[in-house]
Amino acid sequence: MPLTTPTGPRVPNELGRIPIVEWHQVVTVDGTYKVSRERFRAELRELHARGYVPVNLSELLDKTMDVPAGKSPVLLTFDDASPSQFRYLERNGRLVVDPTSAVGMLLDFVAAHPDWKAKGLFCLMPAAEAGHAFFGDKGIDGQQTAWRFKKVQFLVQQGFELCNHTLWHAKLSKYSDAVVQEQLARGAMAIDSAVPGYRVRGLALPYGLWPKNRALAIQGSWYDAKDKRTVRYQHDAVLEVSGGPARSPFDPAFNPTSLPRVPLQGGTSLSITLDQMDKPGAWARYVSDGNPKTVAKP
Ligand SMILES: [Zn+2]
Image 1 (tube, rainbow, N blue to C red):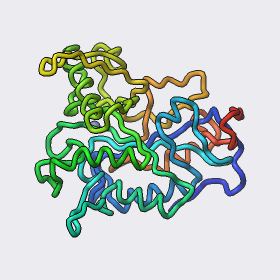
Image 2: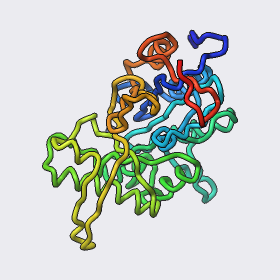
Image 3: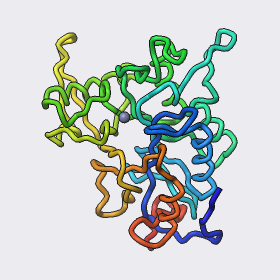
């Protein structure tokens, strides 16, 4: 693995950039919106070896990231809720996490590296096609519809966070305000059904496309005619699909409603982004001083 990280101690810089890395399907070979399992494991190893430590979106937004001195935060994000990310296997009448799904590989990695905790953001659709419905339904990839809520609950129990990725991955740019609000309200409502009272703080825009009325990505409401009630949603953060590493929440120009990400798929390279972050300049990495109460400036 190419490693260009300086071996000496890194100088604290809590105004530096934070990579929000983004995976979609984790399968057999790299492709559009796909990485191989070997590559996924290698990317986890590389982040760890270069001194990155996973944080959660809420810690980033609330400025409560607790990262050891000399280390850097990374936010791991997973879009589209496919079985390749989280698959169950039935073993002797019990459900176990498939160790070859992304969640299985990540949990194994965390278990083997005690300086990492199970943190990261899963951006979910509850009702998309082809198994992209809370990690699989209707027998697709061996996944049963009845397992969906259990998977979402399991992620929260482990320490991961959940994010809205619409009802069924609608291109928000081409729909009316009413449809946009239905997509986002029902996406949030489905998470609340799986984990009652869960506060959904992030929205990942499908394809990075904004609704015509951008304000509706942040908040809105939809009338649920079946239950005769108005469902409101409010997102503190909106995640784009690309744009490089994000600004530190301590940077005055930090904008949580437009967070760029580092997409990882065929044709992209994590190493190139991390190499650039190890150089001085606009993308220089966030390096913790180890004290969450102070902000170390370069
Ligand atoms: Zn997506």
